Image (cartoon, rainbow, N blue to C red; front, side, top):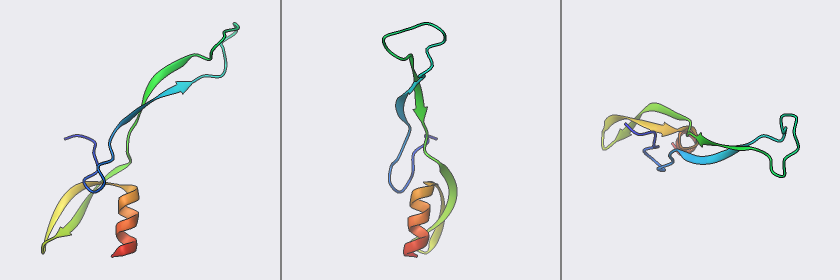
Amino acid sequence: MPAICAVCGKGTTFGRNIRHHHSGRWEREAPKTNRTFKPNLHRQLIHVDGGSVRVKVCTRCLRSQTKTA
């Protein structure tokens, strides 16, 4: 099952780590490595149409859901 929020669709995004320490030698650019940003997902019971469904929800949607409910 993919790491995607069932409410907003937030998923894994890609970015770069930038090391500002050049490991002893002078370089024109700081070394960069690829990395992933994963959403903070929790398995939560959500009530839909009188029944409850267990889905993966990110913490931002979880907070919004408790404020509106």
